[in-house]
Length: 278
Image (cartoon, one colour):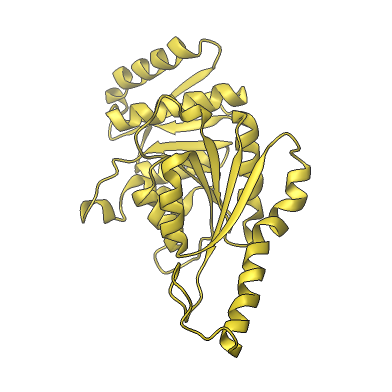
């Protein structure tokens, strides 16, 4: 059974997948769509209790949401990547391991982020009671992030909250957030000033036309001179969700994503919504 605009969530009976299930149910209810609950197992006979529990949990909170439980044999990341092709949103949890364990690239969430065919919500951070009232955060690199910007506007509109747009940049010869060592009258300082004005205009330029399509969404934009990964990770402390465009590139071992996406998947204080843009 397929649904044109359904939400997909991967579960395995763990606590973190239960949180992913809860957020996926929230998204399905918010969108008015069906929820497809996928459990990837070595043997389908093992899936029954977990899927029955998942369906019951969703229906206790959202009786009107249609839930379709599905057991699939295979590799979790590959199965969910395939499932994502027909979904409006795919949701997975991450155990958020720190240190060496947290850098294992074979984890389902990281592998899926590199191959998902639809927006991917990776559940991170501690869920707070006021999460639904917090703003949506958009990490904006350039005008090539227009797809992510559109999705962030739609997400803010669905939640009825403000959209915070954060654009950060660095200059190769000036340390972020520190006074410039270049004399104010030097050609280098002049170039830095011109670059600064250009970077400050990026959020306004990118969002201007898009905001007209969502007049009910309040948008606040800012541009800061610091490393993008650091700026976004810090900003996630006050956000309900952070939206980021994933500029994926091919390689001998498949698709890869950039350092900012990688940093957020490891260290974000709130769920991360990855929008594939290439």
